[in-house]
Length: 160
Image: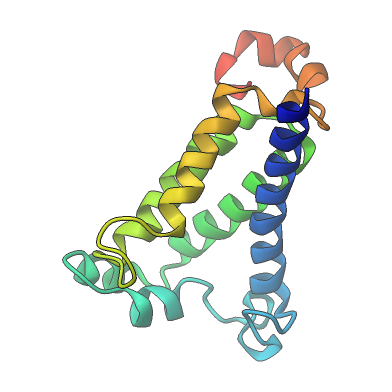
């Protein structure tokens, strides 16, 4: 039973990381993003990171998509929806797969990581997402059980 408590808390914590990143980048709450550089004030949430922080063999690709409005919207919607789904315990499979893709993209923008030749926090987060899927983490401190009983979720299993 203790492991289920930990899984529920891990899921909610991961959700808060993503939701907080969305809120800070959107409104410039002064943590990672100052107000003047917030999305709501017209600054691209992907420009700085993809233009200045990316390095390695994929740097040219990431520099080319930096600040693209479609990339900005996909990134911000990803942060928001992954965060909300994890916090609520709904759509864990699709949220976690989206999170894995986002983490692998962010990891690949900085190949090879400076502190370790292969592993950084993006890979650890991706592994956590796998755990959240495997152990039905939405069922613990979340709405996962109720969510799975909706007719449209039963019909479209990828929404689980």
